[in-house]
Image: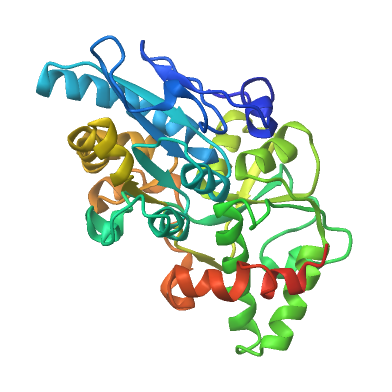
Length: 354
């Protein structure tokens, strides 16, 4: 089990570089691998090294997955592999790779962040179809985490704009999860107001006026809410909310809104780095194995929704599978959504003047 304050607060908030490798089945993580020679894909004393640059809430998932993959790869090839893991806000992680962090693979919160790496010439076009399910081996959604008893009576998005409700959510400028949060709320308001954009924007302004802390990443927001006891409601990845309730069953509960969004974290090989580091085969094997039954079981146990429908149903008691979910296609895909909502000077900046 995890203790957010003791284990992750410094990682979520620190600006300094920490990169730790998986050599004995134990795991620690860093926020930014750039500039670290140990985060390359070169061989270390005969052991091939692979670096996975990921986003905030996947720390525990990849700690477990990496142990399983090392055993699988050793049994299949007879070779040992050293796995380097890095975590931070998804947008910031993508920028770190663009700026020189030698990721062999990226496993980020949304496809647009990987597109940024592609546009820098590091990932070949067509990556979205390289792996199954649009290169999304697991999904999640957006829910509310509230304190036990739900004193403010929060049941749906409407309740978040009431006077006196304090919201914790990360910043869409740096967090992929925050972008999913925003779009889920926008979809709710769009349906409520029959796509009247002026009314939708007014709803969103009221919602973000109630945001009291906006961390750079989803894990930082979880720490703020769960450990630092700030806010009345956390707009959260479902997997983060599940972990919090599992850790503190007497303190928190999950509220499923009437409308949310199918969040599809994406994975890709950073082709330019993998070619240079000689890890192309290893990188492909690493991401392919996420679709294996063993990995899908790990994914389900970790609070993510497995892409394997049969295994998803096996863990159905963890998830509200009846929730109405829109998808990124309802916003024209990630490129269009980012251009409309999150680029500088667009809708998010308009409704959240700093």
